[in-house]
Image (cartoon, rainbow, N blue to C red; front, side, top):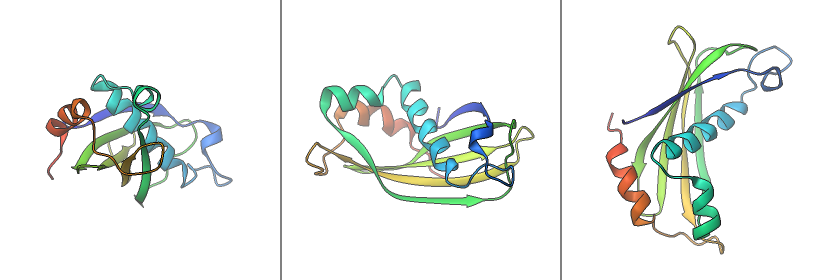
Length: 137
């Protein structure tokens, strides 16, 4: 597995006055994708926060929009790892409509920090799970 897919139906609350998904809500979809991607590897982000007191904080994001998604559309959110550094990770995301047309794509760079907001290296257990998932394209 070099990516994780999940389907989500667009709720009315996700849309703007024009009836399309509000542009910033794509970042929320990306975040849900990251959480589910990690869960699919047997790793709960919540456990890392609560047990190890480590946090992944966003330091950079980028989104490109190709087509709108509307209320009640069923979309697919694809998440993958595009870069893994010692103390940072870049997750890529792609969102597709029901006909497999690309709606949006982007990336979010996250730094791993402790409770003092100091960068720390990824725990060996997580790094070991993430390295084989690195997508090189």
